[in-house]
Image 1 (tube, rainbow, N blue to C red):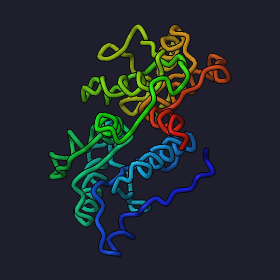
Image 2: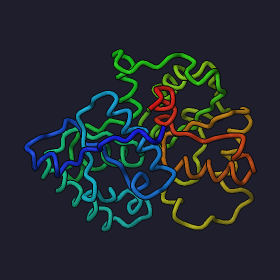
Image 3: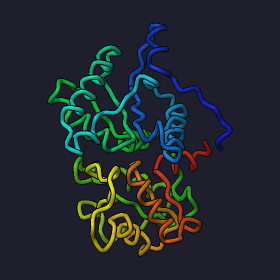
Amino acid sequence: METRKIEVPVMADMFARGEKPEYLFWVGCAGAFDDRYKKVVRAFTKILTYLNVSYAVLGKEETCTGDPARRAGNEMLYQMQALTVIETFKMYEVRKIITICPHCYNIFKNEYPDLGGNYEVINYLVFLKQYIDDGKLKIDAGALDNVRITYHDPCYLGRANDIYSEPRQILNALTGNMVEMERHKSFALCCGAGGAQMFKEAEKGEKEIFIERTEDALKTDPAIIATACPFCMTMLTDGLKYKNKEEEIKNFDIAELIARSLNL
């Protein structure tokens, strides 16, 4: 599966040729630097290529949105980062942005407008669900052979932006055996990494959040825990390792499951 190579278009190269893509695919820090999440980026770019979508990435010109800085309380650093990104977007006349990270999605959609950054921001699951509805992305029901899958709602996708139905509809198209955790949708428990908690030591307490959320998932007896956020993927993968379940239960992003069903 990994042997199939694709050419990822870079915004600067396209502009040098006088071309302008319809979408900017914002890879995000995790997609650029985290070895596990790079696999999610590869899966999604394969799907974009399969669908013949007009897109490009910024490549080396992409930097952090500033979201972690703002969540951690460093407003000045956030604004410096955000204004740098906005200037880059102006240079390339960016209008539509596809994100795979809910944190990037949320800050582009809800917080950048305060600094003059107004864009059509699209989460990748909403984007892919539209292609499924239009008949351009065909996923066979039960593509994963009735594999038992549970889904963890990322905070910035669910509670912050009310994206609940699209991931579930996609998963139901992939398997006939999707099971919900007891705490799900607006009642879902955070993975433990939000609010810049990802980058600090755990505070005093009886149990870390990621362990409790992993336990929520394990109660459903899944073969796969599906996620849609790099922070959630890191925390739940760590949770599976903590519980010594990483060999029997896997954590995949929904884009990876779609790519797998299409043999990409």
